[in-house]
Length: 375
Image (cartoon, rainbow, N blue to C red; front, top):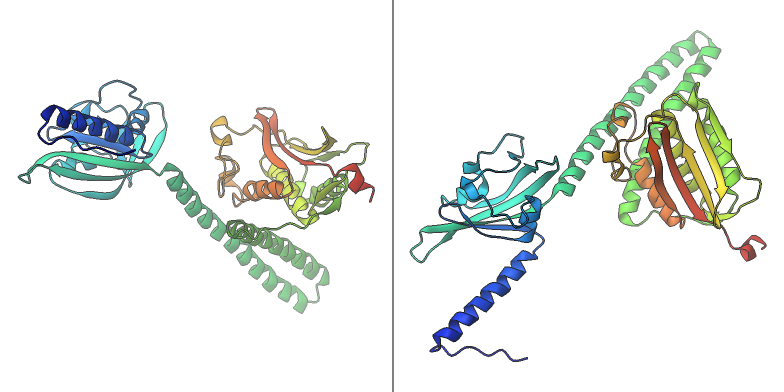
C-alpha cells in the first residue's frame, strides 16, 4: 500500500496528518512493555502509557504529577525515601539526565516494585527545558533473583565452612584417640566425619546440578523401574536421620513400572522427604505411592504448620527459601532441581496442598505401556 504525503500547501491535510501520526505514536507508546511518563515544565503529566496507569493503579483517573499526592512510597536502592522533588523526572525538569537509577515503589496494597529508571529533559528550539520524559522497566524479578542469589552464596559459604571446620576438629581428635589406641572412639569419630562429608557433598551436588541445568547438560538415563522399590529404599535410607520422627510408607498392592533414571528419581524423593523431616513440625512423615489414571503418584505428607500462601508461588524458584526455612540448613535448590528432574522424567512436581494440618508435595509420572512392560 503506497503512502501519500499531504500537499504542503493544504493546511487542513497537514493538521490531519499530524493528528494521525500523533495518535499512532500514542498507541505505540501505550503498548510498550516499559512505563513511559511525560511532563510539562510545571510538572504536570501530559502523557503516560498503560503500564504506568496499571502500576500506579490509576485506571482512567488523572495523574497527579509532581504537585499531587503520590499513592504509595518511593525509595532509593539503599532504602532511603525519595522526596518528589528528587525523583528522576523532577531532576530532568531541572536539566539533568538520569541513566539507570533504581527506584523502589511500594503500592498502598503492599506490592513492591523495583523500577530501573531513565529520564531526560525535553528542550524547545531555544534550548530551554520545556518538559521531561521518563521511562522505567520493571526489574523486580531480576532484583529478587539477585537478592536470593546473594543470600544463597552467603548461606552456601556458611554451609561449607561449618562442616569443614568440624571435620578438621574431628580428624585431629581421631589422631589423638589413635595415639592412645582408643579404637572405638576413633571409629565413632570417623563416622561423624563421614556424615559431615556427605553433607558437604550434597551441597556441592546441588550447585553442580543447578549449573548443569543452566548449560542444558542435566541429562537422565531412562530404564524400567519399579517405583515402589525406589520409594521403599529411600524411606529406609532416611529413617536414621529422622530422629524421633516416624517415617511411614504406603505402597499399592498392584505392581507399577515406570521409565526413569533411578539415581535422579532417588534424588527427587530424598529432597522431598528431607524437606518434610526438616520443616514438617513434630508429626509423622508419610510417603505414599498410588496408581492413578495410568500414572504413578508419590505424595510426601508432613504435619507441620504449612507454607504461607504468599510464599507458595516461589517455592520452585532457584535459591528461594521460605521464611520458616531460612533458620535451618539448606540451599534453596532442592525443589528447583526436583522440578527439573520431574520434567525430564516426563512427570510433574507440585505443591498439592498446605495448611495448619500439614503440607503435601505430589510427584507423578506416566506408567510404561503394557507392551513395554512385557518385554
